Image 1 (cartoon, rainbow, N blue to C red):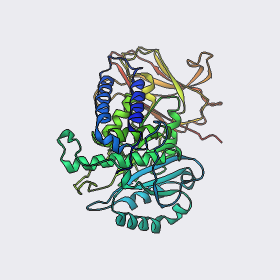
Image 2: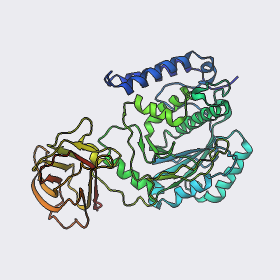
Image 3: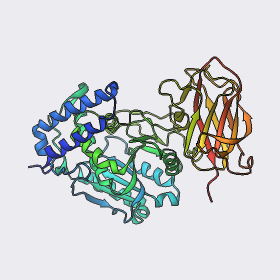
Image 4: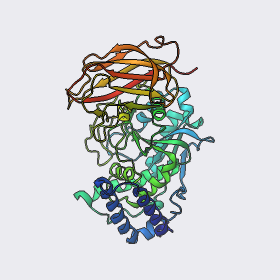
Amino acid sequence: MRCFLRRSLLAATFLLVFLFISLTIWTQKDTEMVEAQQWARSIGLQQLQADWNLRSLQNLTNATNILSVSYQYLAGIPPLQKKFLTVGLCSVKRKKENYLLETLRSIFEQSTGEELEDMVVVVHLADPDQGWNAQVVSNIAKRFAHHILLGRLLVIHAPHEYYPSLEGLKQNFNDAKDRVKFRSKQNVDYAYLMNFASSLSTYYLMIEDDVRCAKKFLSAIRRVLESQKRSYWVTLEFSKLGYIGKLYHSSDLPQLSRFLLLFYQEMPCDWLLGHFRLLLTQKEVIRFKPSLFQHIGLYSSFQGTSNKLKDEDFEEDATDLPDNPPADMITDIASFENYLPSKAYSNTEEYFWGKAPSAGNSFTIVFKQPAWILRIQIQTGSEKHREDYLQEGLVELGTQKKSDGKGCNMYTSIGRFEKGNFNKQDLENKMASAPECIRILVTKDQSEWLIIRSISIWTKPSS
Protein backbone atom coordinates (compact mmCIF):
# COMPACT_ATOMS: atom_id res chain seq x y z
CA MET A 1 0.00 0.00 0.00
CA ARG A 2 1.26 3.49 -0.87
CA CYS A 3 2.48 5.63 1.97
CA PHE A 4 1.49 9.09 0.69
CA LEU A 5 -1.36 10.45 2.81
CA ARG A 6 -2.79 9.60 6.13
CA ARG A 7 -4.53 12.86 7.06
CA SER A 8 -5.62 13.97 3.62
CA LEU A 9 -9.19 15.07 4.23
CA LEU A 10 -8.35 17.26 7.22
CA ALA A 11 -5.29 18.85 5.66
CA ALA A 12 -6.75 19.38 2.21
CA THR A 13 -9.91 20.87 3.73
CA PHE A 14 -7.73 23.22 5.80
CA LEU A 15 -5.96 24.35 2.64
CA LEU A 16 -9.19 24.97 0.76
CA VAL A 17 -10.67 26.92 3.68
CA PHE A 18 -7.51 29.04 3.81
CA LEU A 19 -7.73 29.80 0.10
CA PHE A 20 -11.42 30.68 0.29
CA ILE A 21 -10.83 33.04 3.22
CA SER A 22 -8.11 34.76 1.19
CA LEU A 23 -10.72 35.54 -1.45
CA THR A 24 -13.21 37.25 0.85
CA ILE A 25 -11.46 40.61 0.65
CA TRP A 26 -12.24 40.78 -3.08
CA THR A 27 -15.46 42.26 -4.39
CA GLN A 28 -17.96 39.83 -5.93
CA LYS A 29 -17.97 42.06 -9.04
CA ASP A 30 -14.49 40.81 -9.90
CA THR A 31 -15.25 38.06 -12.42
CA GLU A 32 -11.69 36.73 -12.37
CA MET A 33 -11.88 36.20 -8.61
CA VAL A 34 -15.30 34.57 -8.84
CA GLU A 35 -14.09 32.15 -11.50
CA ALA A 36 -11.02 31.21 -9.45
CA GLN A 37 -13.16 30.71 -6.34
CA GLN A 38 -15.69 28.55 -8.14
CA TRP A 39 -12.94 26.47 -9.75
CA ALA A 40 -11.12 25.84 -6.47
CA ARG A 41 -14.33 24.95 -4.66
CA SER A 42 -15.71 22.58 -7.28
CA ILE A 43 -12.47 20.79 -8.15
CA GLY A 44 -11.26 20.75 -4.55
CA LEU A 45 -14.41 19.09 -3.28
CA GLN A 46 -14.20 16.51 -6.06
CA GLN A 47 -10.64 15.72 -5.06
CA LEU A 48 -11.54 15.39 -1.40
CA GLN A 49 -14.22 12.81 -2.25
CA ALA A 50 -12.03 10.77 -4.61
CA ASP A 51 -10.61 7.39 -3.53
CA TRP A 52 -7.06 8.40 -4.52
CA ASN A 53 -7.01 11.05 -1.81
CA LEU A 54 -7.24 8.43 0.91
CA ARG A 55 -4.22 6.65 -0.57
CA SER A 56 -2.23 9.49 -2.11
CA LEU A 57 -2.19 12.49 0.23
CA GLN A 58 -0.71 10.77 3.30
CA ASN A 59 1.58 12.85 5.58
CA LEU A 60 -0.29 16.11 4.99
CA THR A 61 -0.58 17.71 8.40
CA ASN A 62 -0.87 21.49 8.71
CA ALA A 63 -1.03 23.65 5.58
CA THR A 64 1.65 25.99 6.94
CA ASN A 65 4.14 23.22 7.79
CA ILE A 66 6.31 21.21 5.43
CA LEU A 67 5.30 17.73 4.32
CA SER A 68 6.92 14.78 6.03
CA VAL A 69 8.92 13.21 3.20
CA SER A 70 12.09 11.13 3.47
CA TYR A 71 14.21 12.61 0.70
CA GLN A 72 17.27 10.88 -0.69
CA TYR A 73 20.38 13.09 -0.65
CA LEU A 74 22.23 12.29 -3.87
CA ALA A 75 24.90 15.01 -3.56
CA GLY A 76 25.61 17.68 -0.95
CA ILE A 77 23.84 18.58 2.27
CA PRO A 78 21.55 21.50 3.21
CA PRO A 79 23.39 24.71 4.20
CA LEU A 80 23.90 25.30 7.90
CA GLN A 81 22.72 28.91 7.68
CA LYS A 82 19.61 30.25 5.99
CA LYS A 83 20.37 31.78 2.60
CA PHE A 84 18.87 34.75 0.78
CA LEU A 85 17.80 32.76 -2.29
CA THR A 86 17.20 29.14 -3.28
CA VAL A 87 17.28 28.38 -7.00
CA GLY A 88 15.21 25.26 -7.58
CA LEU A 89 14.85 23.03 -10.66
CA CYS A 90 13.58 19.56 -11.48
CA SER A 91 15.12 17.28 -14.08
CA VAL A 92 14.05 14.00 -15.67
CA LYS A 93 15.48 11.79 -18.39
CA ARG A 94 14.91 13.23 -21.86
CA LYS A 95 14.54 11.31 -25.09
CA LYS A 96 16.98 13.68 -26.80
CA GLU A 97 19.39 16.30 -25.48
CA ASN A 98 19.82 17.01 -21.77
CA TYR A 99 20.65 20.58 -20.75
CA LEU A 100 21.00 20.27 -16.98
CA LEU A 101 24.79 20.61 -16.80
CA GLU A 102 24.72 23.64 -19.07
CA THR A 103 22.04 25.24 -16.89
CA LEU A 104 24.07 24.68 -13.72
CA ARG A 105 27.18 26.06 -15.40
CA SER A 106 25.26 29.21 -16.35
CA ILE A 107 23.98 29.70 -12.78
CA PHE A 108 27.46 29.53 -11.28
CA GLU A 109 29.40 31.34 -14.02
CA GLN A 110 26.96 34.24 -14.23
CA SER A 111 27.13 34.85 -10.45
CA THR A 112 29.82 36.61 -8.45
CA GLY A 113 31.47 35.06 -5.40
CA GLU A 114 29.45 37.31 -3.10
CA GLU A 115 26.21 36.31 -4.82
CA LEU A 116 27.05 32.62 -4.53
CA GLU A 117 27.49 33.03 -0.77
CA ASP A 118 23.83 34.11 -0.56
CA MET A 119 22.50 31.34 -2.78
CA VAL A 120 21.87 27.59 -2.77
CA VAL A 121 20.90 25.59 -5.86
CA VAL A 122 18.65 22.57 -5.34
CA VAL A 123 18.21 20.01 -8.12
CA HIS A 124 15.41 17.47 -7.79
CA LEU A 125 16.26 14.47 -9.97
CA ALA A 126 12.70 13.25 -10.34
CA ASP A 127 13.13 10.35 -12.76
CA PRO A 128 12.15 6.87 -11.48
CA ASP A 129 15.18 5.40 -13.29
CA GLN A 130 17.73 5.17 -10.47
CA GLY A 131 20.49 4.23 -12.90
CA TRP A 132 19.95 7.45 -14.83
CA ASN A 133 19.86 9.47 -11.60
CA ALA A 134 23.15 7.94 -10.48
CA GLN A 135 24.83 8.76 -13.80
CA VAL A 136 23.63 12.36 -13.68
CA VAL A 137 24.85 12.75 -10.10
CA SER A 138 28.24 11.41 -11.16
CA ASN A 139 28.42 13.98 -13.97
CA ILE A 140 27.36 16.79 -11.64
CA ALA A 141 29.94 15.78 -9.03
CA LYS A 142 32.72 15.81 -11.61
CA ARG A 143 31.81 19.24 -12.97
CA PHE A 144 30.68 21.02 -9.80
CA ALA A 145 32.48 19.34 -6.91
CA HIS A 146 33.71 22.73 -5.66
CA HIS A 147 30.18 24.09 -5.30
CA ILE A 148 28.94 20.89 -3.66
CA LEU A 149 31.72 21.03 -1.05
CA LEU A 150 30.97 24.69 -0.33
CA GLY A 151 27.26 23.96 0.22
CA ARG A 152 26.10 25.83 -2.87
CA LEU A 153 24.66 22.83 -4.72
CA LEU A 154 22.39 20.08 -3.46
CA VAL A 155 20.88 17.17 -5.42
CA ILE A 156 17.85 15.32 -4.00
CA HIS A 157 15.28 12.69 -4.96
CA ALA A 158 11.76 12.14 -3.61
CA PRO A 159 11.10 8.37 -3.62
CA HIS A 160 8.38 6.98 -5.85
CA GLU A 161 6.29 5.70 -2.92
CA TYR A 162 5.40 9.29 -2.00
CA TYR A 163 3.71 9.89 -5.35
CA PRO A 164 -0.04 9.58 -5.92
CA SER A 165 -1.38 7.26 -8.58
CA LEU A 166 -0.63 8.39 -12.13
CA GLU A 167 -3.15 6.05 -13.71
CA GLY A 168 -6.78 6.77 -14.55
CA LEU A 169 -6.20 10.55 -14.49
CA LYS A 170 -8.61 13.16 -15.80
CA GLN A 171 -8.05 13.98 -19.47
CA ASN A 172 -8.71 17.69 -19.24
CA PHE A 173 -8.23 19.92 -22.31
CA ASN A 174 -8.46 16.81 -24.54
CA ASP A 175 -4.84 15.96 -23.70
CA ALA A 176 -3.67 12.46 -24.54
CA LYS A 177 -3.19 10.05 -21.63
CA ASP A 178 0.61 10.16 -21.82
CA ARG A 179 0.57 13.97 -21.83
CA VAL A 180 -1.75 14.05 -18.79
CA LYS A 181 0.48 11.58 -16.96
CA PHE A 182 3.60 13.62 -17.73
CA ARG A 183 2.21 16.98 -16.60
CA SER A 184 0.54 15.46 -13.51
CA LYS A 185 3.80 13.89 -12.38
CA GLN A 186 5.59 17.18 -13.08
CA ASN A 187 3.23 18.97 -10.69
CA VAL A 188 4.14 16.48 -7.96
CA ASP A 189 7.85 16.79 -8.81
CA TYR A 190 7.64 20.54 -8.28
CA ALA A 191 5.55 20.17 -5.13
CA TYR A 192 8.20 18.02 -3.44
CA LEU A 193 11.01 20.30 -4.59
CA MET A 194 9.28 23.35 -3.11
CA ASN A 195 8.45 21.48 0.07
CA PHE A 196 12.13 20.60 0.52
CA ALA A 197 13.31 24.15 -0.21
CA SER A 198 10.84 25.97 2.04
CA SER A 199 13.22 26.35 5.00
CA LEU A 200 16.50 26.96 3.14
CA SER A 201 16.20 30.66 2.33
CA THR A 202 14.08 33.80 2.45
CA TYR A 203 13.14 33.67 -1.23
CA TYR A 204 12.71 30.87 -3.73
CA LEU A 205 13.31 31.07 -7.49
CA MET A 206 11.99 28.37 -9.80
CA ILE A 207 13.70 27.77 -13.13
CA GLU A 208 13.69 24.87 -15.58
CA ASP A 209 16.62 22.60 -16.40
CA ASP A 210 17.25 24.12 -19.84
CA VAL A 211 17.92 27.84 -19.30
CA ARG A 212 20.68 30.41 -19.55
CA CYS A 213 20.95 33.06 -16.83
CA ALA A 214 21.68 36.75 -17.15
CA LYS A 215 24.87 38.06 -15.59
CA LYS A 216 24.44 38.88 -11.88
CA PHE A 217 20.80 37.82 -11.90
CA LEU A 218 20.71 37.61 -8.10
CA SER A 219 21.75 41.26 -7.73
CA ALA A 220 19.08 42.25 -10.25
CA ILE A 221 16.48 40.36 -8.22
CA ARG A 222 17.68 42.11 -5.05
CA ARG A 223 17.11 45.51 -6.65
CA VAL A 224 13.61 44.52 -7.71
CA LEU A 225 12.78 43.26 -4.22
CA GLU A 226 13.98 46.54 -2.75
CA SER A 227 11.64 48.46 -5.05
CA GLN A 228 8.74 46.13 -4.14
CA LYS A 229 9.25 45.89 -0.40
CA ARG A 230 6.24 48.05 0.43
CA SER A 231 4.01 46.17 -2.04
CA TYR A 232 2.04 42.96 -1.61
CA TRP A 233 3.00 40.18 -4.01
CA VAL A 234 2.79 36.41 -4.24
CA THR A 235 4.78 35.85 -7.44
CA LEU A 236 7.31 38.04 -9.23
CA GLU A 237 8.19 36.96 -12.75
CA PHE A 238 11.58 37.38 -14.45
CA SER A 239 10.71 35.53 -17.66
CA LYS A 240 7.56 35.24 -19.73
CA LEU A 241 8.10 31.55 -20.53
CA GLY A 242 6.72 28.50 -18.72
CA TYR A 243 7.86 27.92 -15.17
CA ILE A 244 11.07 29.91 -15.62
CA GLY A 245 12.17 32.79 -13.42
CA LYS A 246 9.24 32.74 -10.98
CA LEU A 247 10.06 34.13 -7.52
CA TYR A 248 8.21 33.35 -4.26
CA HIS A 249 8.48 34.03 -0.56
CA SER A 250 9.78 30.76 0.89
CA SER A 251 7.13 31.08 3.60
CA ASP A 252 4.47 30.47 0.90
CA LEU A 253 6.04 27.23 -0.33
CA PRO A 254 4.30 24.83 2.10
CA GLN A 255 0.91 26.11 0.90
CA LEU A 256 2.00 26.08 -2.73
CA SER A 257 3.33 22.52 -2.54
CA ARG A 258 0.03 21.32 -1.07
CA PHE A 259 -1.88 23.23 -3.71
CA LEU A 260 0.04 21.45 -6.48
CA LEU A 261 -0.56 18.08 -4.81
CA LEU A 262 -4.27 18.70 -4.36
CA PHE A 263 -4.83 19.74 -7.99
CA TYR A 264 -1.99 17.80 -9.61
CA GLN A 265 -4.09 16.18 -12.34
CA GLU A 266 -6.12 19.24 -13.31
CA MET A 267 -3.77 21.23 -15.56
CA PRO A 268 -0.09 22.10 -16.26
CA CYS A 269 1.92 23.62 -13.42
CA ASP A 270 2.23 27.13 -14.90
CA TRP A 271 -1.57 27.31 -15.20
CA LEU A 272 -2.03 26.10 -11.64
CA LEU A 273 0.36 28.77 -10.42
CA GLY A 274 -1.82 31.44 -11.97
CA HIS A 275 -4.75 30.13 -9.93
CA PHE A 276 -2.61 30.08 -6.78
CA ARG A 277 -1.64 33.72 -7.33
CA LEU A 278 -5.29 34.70 -7.76
CA LEU A 279 -6.41 32.77 -4.70
CA LEU A 280 -3.81 34.59 -2.61
CA THR A 281 -5.24 37.88 -3.97
CA GLN A 282 -2.50 39.01 -6.34
CA LYS A 283 -4.73 39.75 -9.30
CA GLU A 284 -2.22 41.15 -11.81
CA VAL A 285 0.86 39.45 -13.21
CA ILE A 286 4.00 41.30 -12.04
CA ARG A 287 6.65 40.64 -14.65
CA PHE A 288 9.91 42.56 -14.99
CA LYS A 289 11.89 43.43 -18.07
CA PRO A 290 14.45 42.71 -19.27
CA SER A 291 14.01 38.99 -18.58
CA LEU A 292 16.79 37.38 -16.56
CA PHE A 293 16.44 33.83 -17.91
CA GLN A 294 16.36 32.42 -21.43
CA HIS A 295 15.09 29.06 -22.61
CA ILE A 296 17.88 27.20 -24.45
CA GLY A 297 16.37 23.76 -25.03
CA LEU A 298 15.53 22.68 -28.54
CA TYR A 299 13.56 19.61 -27.45
CA SER A 300 11.07 19.30 -24.61
CA SER A 301 11.31 16.80 -21.78
CA PHE A 302 7.98 15.36 -22.97
CA GLN A 303 8.64 12.86 -25.79
CA GLY A 304 11.51 14.97 -27.14
CA THR A 305 9.20 17.14 -29.21
CA SER A 306 10.60 20.32 -30.75
CA ASN A 307 10.45 23.31 -28.40
CA LYS A 308 12.30 26.37 -29.65
CA LEU A 309 10.51 29.03 -27.61
CA LYS A 310 12.62 32.11 -26.84
CA ASP A 311 12.03 35.10 -24.59
CA GLU A 312 12.67 38.18 -26.73
CA ASP A 313 12.91 40.31 -23.59
CA PHE A 314 15.97 38.44 -22.31
CA GLU A 315 19.22 40.38 -21.92
CA GLU A 316 22.50 38.63 -21.14
CA ASP A 317 23.82 41.54 -19.08
CA ALA A 318 21.38 42.53 -16.33
CA THR A 319 23.88 44.69 -14.49
CA ASP A 320 22.39 47.90 -15.89
CA LEU A 321 18.94 47.44 -14.41
CA PRO A 322 17.67 50.55 -12.58
CA ASP A 323 17.57 50.77 -8.79
CA ASN A 324 14.28 52.66 -8.36
CA PRO A 325 14.63 53.29 -4.62
CA PRO A 326 11.44 53.09 -2.51
CA ALA A 327 9.23 56.10 -3.20
CA ASP A 328 5.66 57.43 -3.32
CA MET A 329 4.05 58.75 -6.51
CA ILE A 330 2.16 62.05 -6.25
CA THR A 331 0.27 63.60 -9.18
CA ASP A 332 -2.56 66.01 -9.88
CA ILE A 333 -3.24 64.38 -13.26
CA ALA A 334 -6.47 62.36 -13.10
CA SER A 335 -5.81 58.63 -13.49
CA PHE A 336 -7.82 56.54 -15.95
CA GLU A 337 -9.41 53.46 -14.34
CA ASN A 338 -6.73 51.29 -12.68
CA TYR A 339 -3.71 52.79 -14.49
CA LEU A 340 -2.33 54.17 -11.23
CA PRO A 341 0.76 56.39 -10.79
CA SER A 342 2.70 53.62 -9.02
CA LYS A 343 2.60 51.51 -12.19
CA ALA A 344 4.94 53.91 -13.99
CA TYR A 345 7.64 53.17 -11.42
CA SER A 346 7.50 49.38 -11.30
CA ASN A 347 9.54 48.36 -14.38
CA THR A 348 6.77 45.93 -15.30
CA GLU A 349 4.57 45.95 -18.40
CA GLU A 350 2.03 48.16 -16.61
CA TYR A 351 1.97 51.95 -16.84
CA PHE A 352 0.32 55.15 -15.66
CA TRP A 353 -2.42 56.52 -17.89
CA GLY A 354 -3.77 59.97 -17.08
CA LYS A 355 -6.37 62.21 -18.65
CA ALA A 356 -5.26 65.16 -20.77
CA PRO A 357 -2.80 67.21 -18.64
CA SER A 358 -2.54 70.98 -18.52
CA ALA A 359 0.47 73.24 -18.15
CA GLY A 360 1.49 73.22 -14.48
CA ASN A 361 0.36 69.66 -13.80
CA SER A 362 3.04 67.46 -12.32
CA PHE A 363 4.00 63.89 -11.53
CA THR A 364 6.37 63.62 -8.55
CA ILE A 365 8.46 60.75 -7.23
CA VAL A 366 9.02 61.31 -3.50
CA PHE A 367 11.81 59.12 -2.09
CA LYS A 368 11.50 57.46 1.28
CA GLN A 369 15.14 58.39 1.87
CA PRO A 370 17.36 60.93 0.03
CA ALA A 371 19.25 59.32 -2.87
CA TRP A 372 22.24 60.40 -4.92
CA ILE A 373 21.04 60.00 -8.49
CA LEU A 374 23.31 58.96 -11.35
CA ARG A 375 20.85 58.62 -14.20
CA ILE A 376 17.14 59.12 -14.98
CA GLN A 377 15.25 57.60 -17.91
CA ILE A 378 11.54 58.32 -18.47
CA GLN A 379 9.48 56.97 -21.35
CA THR A 380 5.99 58.17 -22.26
CA GLY A 381 3.47 56.95 -24.84
CA SER A 382 3.12 53.37 -26.08
CA GLU A 383 2.98 51.30 -29.25
CA LYS A 384 -0.82 51.10 -29.06
CA HIS A 385 -1.34 54.74 -28.08
CA ARG A 386 1.40 56.64 -29.88
CA GLU A 387 -0.23 60.06 -29.39
CA ASP A 388 -0.48 59.74 -25.61
CA TYR A 389 3.02 61.01 -24.88
CA LEU A 390 4.23 64.08 -23.01
CA GLN A 391 4.46 66.72 -25.71
CA GLU A 392 6.30 69.32 -23.66
CA GLY A 393 7.70 69.01 -20.17
CA LEU A 394 10.79 69.11 -18.02
CA VAL A 395 12.36 67.09 -15.22
CA GLU A 396 13.42 68.62 -11.90
CA LEU A 397 15.32 67.39 -8.86
CA GLY A 398 13.92 68.41 -5.50
CA THR A 399 15.19 68.89 -1.95
CA GLN A 400 13.65 69.95 1.37
CA LYS A 401 10.81 67.43 1.43
CA LYS A 402 7.48 68.88 2.56
CA SER A 403 6.16 67.89 5.98
CA ASP A 404 3.15 66.15 4.41
CA GLY A 405 5.44 64.08 2.17
CA LYS A 406 3.71 65.25 -1.02
CA GLY A 407 6.68 66.81 -2.74
CA CYS A 408 9.66 69.08 -2.11
CA ASN A 409 9.98 72.82 -1.49
CA MET A 410 12.98 73.44 -3.75
CA TYR A 411 13.42 72.21 -7.34
CA THR A 412 16.23 72.47 -9.90
CA SER A 413 15.56 71.79 -13.59
CA ILE A 414 17.89 69.25 -15.23
CA GLY A 415 16.42 69.02 -18.76
CA ARG A 416 13.44 68.74 -21.08
CA PHE A 417 11.61 65.88 -22.71
CA GLU A 418 12.43 65.19 -26.35
CA LYS A 419 9.72 63.45 -28.38
CA GLY A 420 8.15 62.18 -25.19
CA ASN A 421 11.29 60.70 -23.66
CA PHE A 422 13.92 61.83 -21.14
CA ASN A 423 17.31 60.20 -20.60
CA LYS A 424 20.10 61.93 -18.71
CA GLN A 425 23.27 60.60 -17.07
CA ASP A 426 26.09 61.99 -14.90
CA LEU A 427 23.67 63.62 -12.46
CA GLU A 428 25.57 62.92 -9.24
CA ASN A 429 27.06 66.46 -9.09
CA LYS A 430 23.93 68.40 -10.04
CA MET A 431 22.86 68.99 -6.44
CA ALA A 432 24.67 70.03 -3.27
CA SER A 433 22.63 67.51 -1.25
CA ALA A 434 21.02 64.20 -2.14
CA PRO A 435 17.68 64.74 -3.92
CA GLU A 436 14.49 63.76 -2.16
CA CYS A 437 12.14 64.21 -5.14
CA ILE A 438 12.02 63.97 -8.92
CA ARG A 439 9.29 66.01 -10.57
CA ILE A 440 7.93 65.75 -14.10
CA LEU A 441 6.42 69.15 -14.87
CA VAL A 442 3.99 69.61 -17.78
CA THR A 443 4.76 72.88 -19.57
CA LYS A 444 2.03 72.93 -22.24
CA ASP A 445 -1.66 72.04 -22.37
CA GLN A 446 -2.36 68.98 -24.50
CA SER A 447 -5.61 67.43 -25.68
CA GLU A 448 -4.21 63.90 -25.78
CA TRP A 449 -4.04 61.77 -22.66
CA LEU A 450 -0.70 60.93 -21.07
CA ILE A 451 0.92 57.51 -20.66
CA ILE A 452 4.05 57.35 -18.50
CA ARG A 453 5.31 53.93 -19.53
CA SER A 454 8.36 53.68 -17.31
CA ILE A 455 10.45 55.68 -14.87
CA SER A 456 13.94 54.25 -14.32
CA ILE A 457 16.38 55.66 -11.78
CA TRP A 458 19.98 54.65 -11.14
CA THR A 459 21.51 55.71 -7.82
CA LYS A 460 24.97 55.85 -6.31
CA PRO A 461 25.59 52.87 -3.99
CA SER A 462 25.68 53.83 -0.34
CA SER A 463 29.16 53.61 1.16
